[in-house]
Image (cartoon, rainbow, N blue to C red):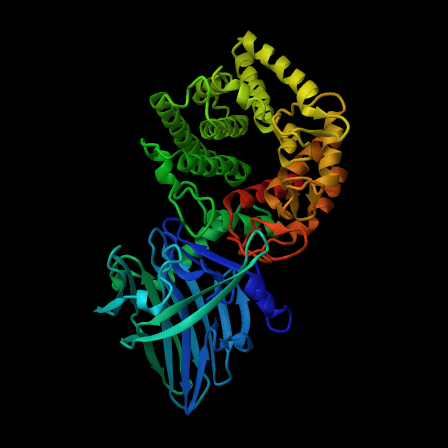
Length: 618
């Protein structure tokens, strides 16, 4: 887990570290490692994507001197606490400061199965006089960038026992409750204007976002001369009885959970241990999410009987669920957590049946001449279903529970082969590779029962012929991404012809395709989606494809210690990124020119694939 200690690492790098802590339900802490007011969707306390408490400012009054510990940048000034930071240890969610007469630490923990965030201060007064210590919360309400300035921030507060209730939005009834047994709340209202956030988007354009923050009061306590105190503040989106909250229990529960997660992982596998902790924050059993902050509840999508009427929204939902399906391998199966995997797979099977029911009900999706949007929708449905078959197969290999999934696998294959869809779907090389893979998996199931399906042999022959005669371009040693495209360039979809349970290429094609991927798509930090020679190449590279790339290499060269070492050298720089920029994970996207793109660092699929990659190499 990323650590900083003064004099060892460059503290300026901390602004690039994405620090995330979650209660696995609806709330998370998402900020930079220095806990500063930084990029637009970074904040100290978040519920459903809305930042409610953007930061904390600590203030000490010692004799006639005042010390402010915060990190903010406005149009008028920049304040940071870099010089006071002595140590940061993300394994304990802890940061330490020394300001001369005072030294203190603060630690963050969520109370298990609640949305209560505890901030614990350990303050040491080294002076022979009293010290006044204040903690000042900075409030905002970022709802799709709408509430940016003071005139929009119509916040109110009312006193609560041991603290305060801040109402951030009358319209949405969003409250944030802050309580403490040790501190006293003092009402005081101020505004800090024009807090600046500068960030770089996918197109490498520099954007600037400004907003106001409200100080609606502060927590205050006095320390005697030479006194050391532990002080706690509890923050929640729901009211709670502070007498029921025990700080020591919270810390012990979290430490126990960490030990439980890591008990089966060798202590020398530092990266894998950190990845396991990080991916636990995105536990699919509680909350099916693609990235953080929690912008959408995918568990709600999966269990809903209603599929929205908007096809673009349907496509976005299906794409996210597909990423969840792909994540099950690295998230659960790698660690042999089969019961949780089965639970999610059954939920998604129900979701797939809901999709089928809506397709049948709509009718518009089965027309003689499907329009572009409907065709795209059916393509994403097919990809979800076929990836589901791949992950189900990996689950069956470990659990031997074939009977749960045989019927749906057959239905999925025949869905793709439906005459209404087949022609359009089989123009796509990813679907072709996945269909071949699904058929081979289905044939294995039938073989176990001494059965066979003659049509499957015909389709396998059809796919082999299409790959050879339609998709393969010998001149460029690539597979066409889609048969309708006029230009032929190396593309990321080619990797799936080599990396699935059953690769679909014959003769010397695997060697040629892998060689092309290495020359035109590979970088040490991930793969491009299009060839570096293609006008479609945007310079972005994605670590999530690296597990497929290494799988293809190991399959081509055989799995030996020597081939694993060669593969490790291909991904060494990427493996070293674990904990460097993201708390226990890898950034979702990089740029091949080395430019740091400001993106949500915490991505479910990327972390799951990094676990799968690590597992292949150890």
